[in-house]
Length: 509
Figure: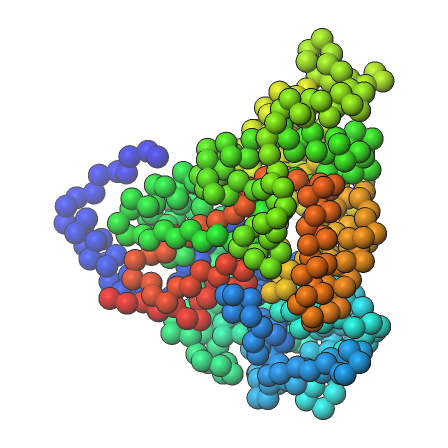
């Protein structure tokens, strides 16, 4: 950074006094910075940010442990035969435009959510209809996990006035404690406290959100005081901020996993032994220690300990063994060429890996994998671009390998995300070209049943199959890294990453 121009002493003092006055005035507001752009007012596209900023709300809410609690619905009940769910709507709730929330607006929003690719589409829904102060969901078959799906970011409820003629949300009007005053997609949102909010009013009067893709930028904003809450720091920035007196740093284990998605229909990857070989070549402990700087995060299986109901301590852990990796590939007919890269039937074992820079550790992990796989004779070309290249590659069949971070608790019951990723046909952020009828059946039983013994048995089957066949290869488990400005009180870091908790924060002395 170039040196700042000299300022006469008197002017400098006046500027400092003015800065202090402005800071005092601004203590009614909070600035939040994260890597995630808000490209649209549509919850199907940007629901994560819309929910996290408490602009729109769900029928069902959840606490930091994933326990379901009342949201826009005060309670819910399933029929004795499991064929329908009834959600009782909270009375007196207003949208930010002053109109009342009613059953018709909720039904309209959730019918659209169900029609979009996403978590709600995984439920066997027949109809979603408005009742008298209720929402009734008729099912084709029992689905005990439905209330948890109603807490997912894509099922927030926008106001009817926010929809265009085609029913697509084009403005950010919800029922949350903050109303949007300025929306500048994809980078920024300005919000004000919603004075007619049905619940407890926020202590702060306003909040700003900024999407900053570069980790260095986010760390500098925390250090300079230009941001009050900064999420997703890179290890270097987190370490530096830990020594800055004006900032508190927090790291919380979360149910997010850095994982490799493999195209299991690719001729190089269609045998589980090939996928196992690539897994055996990965030095997870080294990546966890040197790149993410969370040594306990070296993944021994897909589901981390933070996801206690799905983590299986009885599974044989994933390990590193380059010699075993080479042996598996030799069994499949691969042999080293003159430059050390494996060949078979005249083809080089060369793959393209796609990843994105929004999570700053991903390109670094990609470079490490490139080196580690070359050690067993596999050539890896790395493409770093917008995250959309991953779902696009899944849809058009061009994806070979992708590196990303996946949160398996986007809905409080992980079955919503797991079913989306590993159900019949796989998903944009899950399996590709991989089918396992046993897993599909087990996932359906988990989703349909409220019996813990039935669920636990089926979850064990799913975890074991994913460990054995590796349609995705876990690398490291995650910590949620946050910088908090001194004086900002009431901050609770949500391990499920459903909310930034702005309605609960306030400024102290």
